[in-house]
Length: 311
Image (cartoon, rainbow, N blue to C red; front, side, top):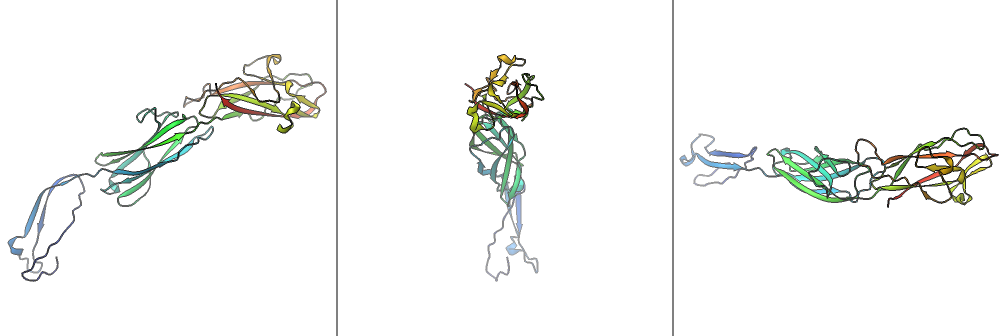
């Protein structure tokens, strides 16, 4: 309090920082430093039942990209970022977690790649004394349902007080397929021979039920009107000589002929729903080639596969 002239007085203030919740008593004592004489024989003052209350964390900001465009056949990293204000200092933030879920499913549904994701330990990316910024990441599967979604962030302090904050986003429709193998190799065939079945797997790698289409052409798409399936070192092979079916073992005469137009394969592929394995979202088509007379050498052509909405 410094030097106080005789007959004068001085007022001082001090601050109190609570380390834990609860009640306590505070005693303040005053005396002369040089001789230890009590000031007017009132050397102390007691404050009783001072109560320290916990201040709940407050989520002041939350952000997520909207809409979300999924990655065909792969997981997409989606970040839900939040800012937390904690007046007890950020050291009192015990945990920050988040859920990303389809609005119609709800916050408390079990995790499922189609509609619900959980991050139980978001990452603290920066902080100061009373504010911390967190990033909550999710690996969203390519077959997550389209529509309205929510990101819910929860901050918990060491007194088990929780603050919540929600933000809306949406996931767009995705129609996509994966075709394997990339090359159909019918092997070495003699003129007039029909190849065996060559299996081509088509997989739905989007989040919509689809039908599949195909178009064949050679030597280029701009010349598809020529109705060629392949061009060879000696002559060519017409579209009618390359055929497909969705049924294994179909006789060549009963298989569908290629033409210069896009045509449906009649292979419907639903949206994937099994997180552990493929189901009907992945299926086979079967292809055969008949070599006409007087053809020789290596032959090449192109098949263009596509996806259309399932009706």
